[in-house]
Structure formats: C-alpha cells, structure tokens
Amino acid sequence: MLVLGIESSCDETAAAVVRDGREILSSIIFSQTDLHRNFGGVVPELASREHLQKIGPIVDQALAEAGITLTDIDGIAVTQGPGLIGSLLVGVCYAKALAYGLGIPVVGVNHIEGHVYSVVFENGEVRYPALALIVSGGHTNLFHIHEEGQYEVISRTRDDAAGEAFDKVAKMLGLGYPGGPLIEKLALSGDPGKVKFTTAKISDGKPDFSFSGLKTAVTRYLRENGIESLKPGEEPTQEIKDLAASFQYAVICALTETMRRQAINLRPKTLIVAGGVACNLALREAARSVAHSIGVPVFFPSRDLSTDNAAMIAAAGHFRLMSGERADLALTADITMRLQNTGTLDTELRQQKVRYRL
Ligand code: KG4
Ligand code: ZN
Image (tube, rainbow, N blue to C red; front, side, top):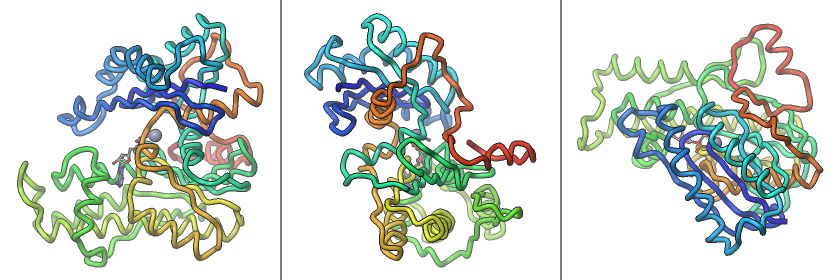
C-alpha cells in the first residue's frame, strides 16, 4: 500500500511516499526557517502563504523521487491538527481535493501521533504497551500507549513546551532561532553543574511539566549577574556556555526523571522519544540511561525524522487506513485536536479549569 503523507501544521511544507507504513520511498521537507528567522519565531500568516506556494511543487517532487505518479497512490494521510489554523488548512484542503480527484481514501492524522510513528522506520518493532515522550516546539507529552492507536496522556506541560523553552532562552541569550540546536552546541563546552536550575513541581501532584519558571530563573540569573545577551557575530563567553549547559541539564532532568518514574510504574515494553527536541544528543543519552536502568529498549527517530516531516504522517495514516478509517469531504483542520482515547484525566483537568497545553 502506497500512502502519500502531507504535513503543513507549522513552518515545514512536507510530502512523503511511504510503502506499507514502514518504507520511505521519498520524504521532501521544505523548511521556512529562513523566512521567519528575522522575527524570532513563526509568523502564522507568512507561514500559510508560503505553504500555499510550496505544497504543489513539494508533492510533485515527492512523487518524482519515489518514482511513481499520482495514480499509483492508494491513500492520502494529512496532518489535521494541532497546529496553526492557516497552515493546517492548506494541507487539509490540498489532500481532500487530491483524494476526491483520484477517487482514493484520505485520513486526517494527529500531528503528535505522527511524531510517535516517526520511530517505525529505523528501529525494531514497537511492542505495546509503550511509553512515548513527545517533545517539540509546541508539545511536551508523555503517552501511555496501551496498544497500537490507544493513547492515554500521562504528562502534559502546564505552560511552555520544552522546545519553546529552548527557543525562548536562546532568544534571551541572543543566540537566534530555532534555539534548540544553538543551545545544544554551546552546552557542549559548558558546565551543566555551574548554575543549579530546577523545574517546578506541580502542586496537585500530577506528573506534569512546567518550564516557564525555568525561563524566569534564567532571566533573573542574567539580570543579577549582569550578563548581556550576545550581539550579532559576538563569540559566546564561558559564562553563557555554562548557562546554556545548566539550562539544558534542567530541562533534560525534568523530562527523563518523569519518564523514568512513569516507566517504573507502568512497565512498558518499549520507550519512544520523538519530536524536534529529540534531536538533542544529551537528551538521547539520558533517555538511554533510563531505558538501560529499567531494561527496555528506547527508540528514537533519526535527526531528519525528529523534526516535522510527512513520512511520519504517512506511517500513522497507514495504520488508520488499514483499520478502515476514512475521512469524508467534511474533514477540516482542528487546532485543538487531542491525542487521547483512553483514560479521562484531560476531562478532569478541563472540568477543574486547570490550564495546560495539548
Ligand atoms: O517537532 P518540531 O520540528 O516542530 C514542532 O512540532 O514544534 O520541533 C521544533 C522544536 C524547536 O523548538 C527546536 O528548538 C527544538 O525542536 N529542537 C531542539 C533541538 N533541535 C530542535 N531542542 C533541543 N535540542 C536540539 N538539538
Ligand atoms: Zn512536530
């Protein structure tokens, strides 16, 4: 079965052709990073206009690289949400029109479920139950996946996502955008024990994450120690390198400690760490040590599959199409889409009016 995946939830326009949910025939990603860099973050309106320009050529390129034509495709999987509404709409409308024209099925895929499936290409078989830490610029969640397609959110962030914290701290230090890779690079020559940052514990006892206090702690540290952010072209000082390493260490500890505690509790057969922040080698190292300590394998996507791509969307869509799921022409973008079909904690939190991120 050949599935065409389409991803346009944020600032990457991507298309991929995946055979039988496991083999990537092509994966084309057009990143808009250059377009948004001057603004220090993604500008939604610019992003959707750019998707509109790029989506046709990117799909054509994915088909050409896979050595197939439109009539060879058996189904289309498109990111339905969460994400930026204008960006999502471009992908969803394009996918629906194409599926209608070709007379083939289309399914909407949750972007975060896509990240979960990003590990299927280069690792062994995922065994269930699995525990998946999905860390990106927009999301930070720990999922207990009871069986394939059955998700329960164990942890979510109450404020900033982990990647967002990396991006904001990088901005404060004058490093540029996106911040994750830049902080990781500086951290390599910094001392993670130099500044003792801690992340907040959630007062209601839930294993949730919170990174905005850490961001404030970095701001305070900069102010109290008279550290100026770097000017363009300026070499980072040792002080800044130590700060980057200490901040990174605090984020990684919060993520992996929660994963370790929940893994001991839930006894998964596979650990998954995916999403843009999973590019971070120090995070991978810490997750490997958690996996080792509890004796289960941990799967990561390769770097290209860690950040947003359409191959992961095609893989998640393959599972849905094989399960008989079909969207009709009423399919539309859903920015509030949740990835939870088991357990009720989200409902409980909503009723208590607790603020948290999807
Ligand atoms: O998954 P992704 O490409 O897009 C979203 O769905 O958000 O993740 C992008 C995020 C950005 O916040 C970026 O700073 C972060 O992933 N990131 C990293 C690294 N590479 C990318 N964070 C920490 N270390 C990295 N090496
Ligand atoms: Zn993503």
